[in-house]
Structures are given as C-alpha cells and as structure tokens.
Image 1: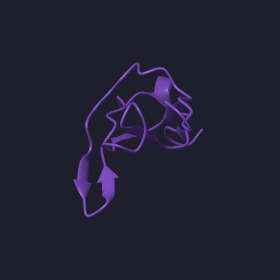
Image 2 (image 1 turned 180 degrees about the vertical axis):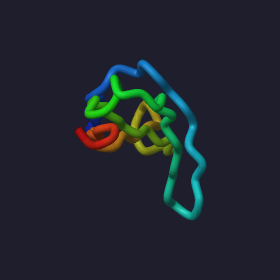
Image 3 (image 1 turned 135 degrees about the horizontal axis):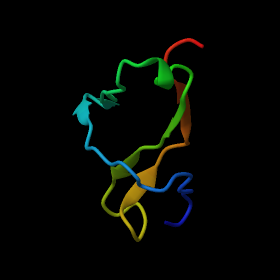
Length: 69
C-alpha cells in the first residue's frame, strides 16, 4: 500500500465497531498466571475508497501487556 507500513502479519483479524470515528474491540485473554506479563501487538486497517490503489489505510503498531507482572 503506497504510503503505509504493515508492521504486523495478519495472524488474527476481527472487524471492530465504528462509533462516530472511534473503533473499539475486545481481546479475550484467558485468566491464567501463564499469560500475566505476556506482550501483544495490534495494528488497524481502514477501508478508504480512492485514498490509494489498495483503498486501505493502516495505523501505527500498538503494544500491550496482559496483567501486571
């Protein structure tokens, strides 16, 4: 996509709900001591017809950590 960087491979995809320009979604992480402190990364893609040849714009990558180590 011209002008955009795909920082992550699409291992898990889920369409978020768009509410007046803000999209939200939940990520279910099992309640287990093995997941405390585990890192996860996210990136969003938005369909914008005519913006570029792919009609897709992507966000910067985001980082999260489950629980508190």
